[in-house]
Amino acid sequence: MKLSKQILGWMMYDFANSAFTTIIVTVVYSVYFVNVIVGGDPGYGEMLWGRAIGISMSLVALTAPILGAVADYSRSKKKFLFINCYLTVIFTALLYFLQPGQVLWGMIIFIVANFGFNSANVFYDAFLPEITTHENIGKISGFGWALGYLGGLLALLVSLFLIRYDVRYVFPMISVHFFIFSLFTFFWLKEIQRPSKRANYFKVAYRRVYTSLKNMKRYPQLLRFILSYFIYNDGITTVIVFASIYGITRFGMTTRDMLIYFILAQLTSIIGSALFGWLTDKNGAKISLSLSLIIWIAVVIWAFFCPSVTQYYCVGLLAGLAIGSSQSNSRTMLSMLTPQDRQAEFFGFYTLTGRLSSIIGPILYGWIAHKTGNIRYSILSLLLFFIVGWITLQFVDPEKGFTDAKRYPLIS
Image (tube, rainbow, N blue to C red; front, side, top):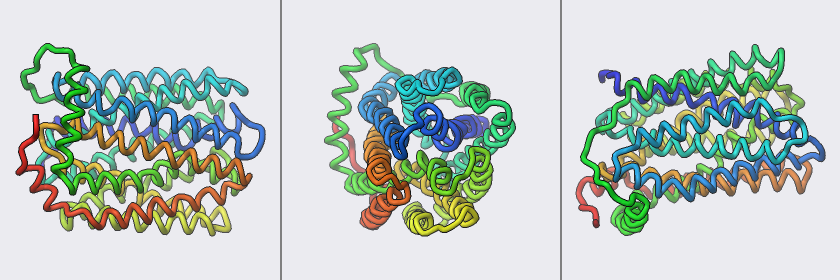
């Protein structure tokens, strides 16, 4: 397998954007928002954080299918990727100016940044089948995630240095990181040039979204996978947005402790992405993804019964292995089951599914924490998502789905 400049350009976006998820969503800003900007009663900050995540994901869910169809029709995936990427860059930098008590602004700025981040991923993911072959798609997706975790590791190390002076310095640093390393993507990644027509793109998009709904009925394996993804992704998203808050609230860990915690977790995430990418190409995405969901179930049970900080570090190592593999394999499964010429559009529906599911988990988790005053009970809600998601996945036949994606003509 040759790593061309096109492939490296695509992979570098993972290196650039993982810093946002790792530092802003998971480790630093989530804790800064709950403990500094909000403060107050136990569970109240967690509830508002869950709502901020839910609102941003709702906005992505509403716009992703339309923008995906527009990008396909106008051949402008790269343009949409650029716009949403730098929307995230700008609003991440603005987090620096937030002060204690500015709860509304703390939510609004984050919501816009998170909206841009997740919207950009629709178009980024849709490039995957254009840059590689079916035989290598698992490796490329896995290597992309692994490189992304290296980017997150770099951001964690720099953040560990900056918090000694002022935790707010971390936010513009992440913005600069995202900006600099995304340049490799925009210089090296080329969109396949196909003719586009002048049209009212939004009218065309609505028509194509309606057509896609009819088309998706012809792909039962794709629909089953999306249902499974809808369920288990809720658990993954909730872990990402509350892991740091859980460690600090339950075990009294500091922001510095959590940075070290996630530095260690990044190492197993890198291993998980590469290892499960290899396993996907050897034994199939379904087996690899099923195994990663079993690991998630073990992570949740262990985190609930975990009696000490030391064991919580071990939980983080196991979670790192699961998150790298599950996210990479989900992207691979969708690419395999989706018709080639509707990738951005169907990735829009994939994102719609993921973001709709991402609304439920964080809000439920925050609500339980607020009502009980004990964040430990919130984590039990995640078991349901991972167990039901795993069961649903077992009804997906990837080989038949791949054949269907190649065989059946699309309704126009």
